[in-house]
Amino acid sequence: MEHIRIYCKNNDTYYSVTPGTQLIDFVRETGYQGKYPVLAAYVDNKLKELGFPLYMAHSVEFIDISYPDGQRTYIRSLSFLLQKTVREMYKNYELVLDYSLPRGLYGELRKKDSEGSIPETVELSSEELAAVKKRMQELVSADLPFIKSKATNQDAVNLFLSHGQTDKAKLHKFIGNFFVSVYYLDGYGDTFYGPLLYSTGYLDKFDLVKYNCGFCLQSPSVQPPYDLPRVIYQEKLYEIFKESSDWYTILGAKNIISVNQIMACGMAPRAIQIAEALHERKYAAIADKIYARRDRVKLVLISGPSSSGKTTTSKRIALQLKIVGLNPVVIAMDNYFRNREDTPRDENGEYDFECLGAMDLEFLNRQLNYLFDGEEVELPKFNFAEGKRYFDGERIRLHPSDVLVMEGIHALNPALTSQIDEEKKFRIYASALTSLSIDENNAISTTDNRLLRRMVRDSNFRGISAEETILRWPSVRKGEYRNIFPYQENADIMFNSFLIYELPLLKHYAEPLLRRISPASAAYAESLRLLKFLSYIVELSPKEQGGIPPTSVMREFIGGSTFVY
Image (cartoon, rainbow, N blue to C red; front, side, top):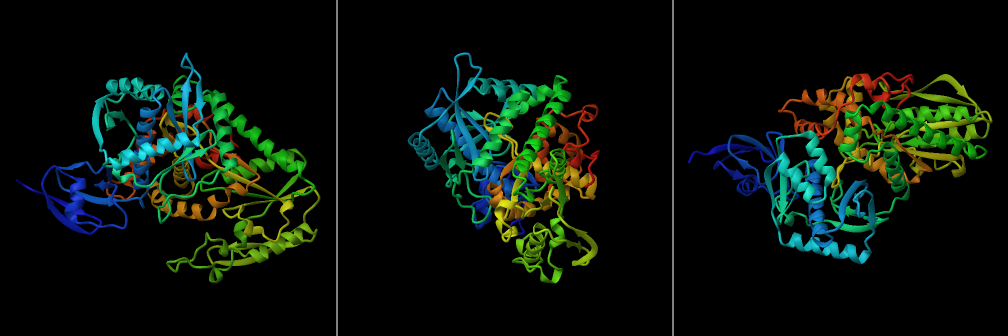
């Protein structure tokens, strides 16, 4: 039998294999031993499960839990395992995986009323959750295969309806593909919008922890050494997700199919108006809280991860502060960098501009305290080309109605302003937190939403291609986990900058950018994943986009803002 030639990128070696060899067998043939078990592979830069057969010459790269696609494959498979278990133990309940938590997925069991209209949350006890976890562990020990098959769209819709997954059925009927990939676990079938692991035996790390009215489904951490992180209840984050869910109820939207229906029925202009009005109400509420503490608060600190809309958020809040009689004075945190030669270096010997040590904390705190004591100070400037601080004579003194506003990645870190009286500070955490879901069992990643925002902004205003944005994203994420996420609960208030219409909006801009990425690029697999996700969304037309206000946070990414950035 004629053999085929396969290149293994992990060890830079070519192999001759029999046509039809599955990837899992190819792993064994290569004798590859990575630091972590192989979970899936890129075949010609396309993500494939380990059951994928090789019939022609390919380039193959094995991926493990250290790859974002490895983590997503793990989470999809773990979600399916939980769904299978719940279906087995609680036949009359519906599993809903609502949104991503910093340390896992938030889920609930829901039981519909007799008419099947209003979902009711069913709170499981710690003992009941322990029993679910035990059954999941039994299925892991059994090492059951995840079996992929193709079904006609109608057969898939009928399958979802038989499981009570009406939202998933409506979505697939709406999209109308000819065929749907369906995975089966011990006879139970579903779809998860991406490859799964080879078998349940790979799911050796997970936990199920009670969390508010539901639970947190934990998978390995996204940071080395990829162990299970300790679950910390983050009340403020939970409340902002709950607030978002309430907003979606006002708009009549809870998942992609309902958003699609709003777009398809010509209701986009109304949805834009309501979404923006809800934002304006939140900005005003934040300004009111600051005003209520005006005798004490002299410093407003704003932080959030990349592409969360921090700049627009700070400008909109500043406008609201003016309305209530306060005068916001913006100080650029970037002007307090240390000179280049004094900047700490990372483990690779490169300057680490994102670490807190890159800031001249002593100088910053000294100037802030001078201002709060009524003294005049000369503000620094920073020349990034030369890596030097300089002064150009700009001096300020605070008046009774003035409030300093500072925005930056370290704003919520107590060490940034450790010498400032706590009562003088008001901290705001801004992010694009979506509790929208694709369907009942597939949450939309907040990270994906921000990546699409950044990709569009980079292309529109920074001359950076979608390919470059994708390749830089892991480094951005690493910095967020180190410098931003650990301090988000320090916020006095959280602002969710996500808008119900933004995924249909971003689709219009992001799809052409993603399609330009070459199949030979290391960003190609990610571009395919994002394109597949966007394929489930109805696009916002250019005419409908005209209804987006010039002060909207989305203008920061697509242009047309009346703010100067």
